[in-house]
Image: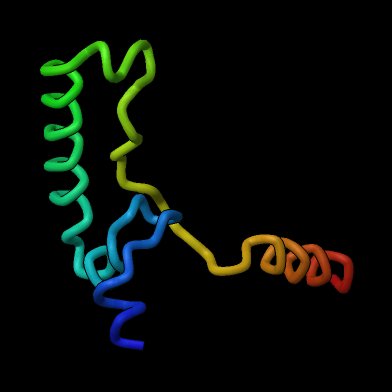
Amino acid sequence: MHWYNHDHKHSKIRFVTPQQRHSGQDAQILQQRKAVLEQAKLAKPSRWGSRPTRNCESIGAVCLNPERDDQIISADKQAA
């Protein structure tokens, strides 16, 4: 459990750990990552071609099973 929350970087939350996200550290980490990627692209533009760098913007709310949440909301609306 500790590894999953403190060491494992999750793709859905832009490759930061859940602990970094919950503590608010993700914004600074992503900002630094964006700067590094942009410098790398400027240093070797031929390596990047016309591709943009990785998206390093913070994301909004995240759920573990969004399709299940949609099903629950839909079922609640039908029951009402």
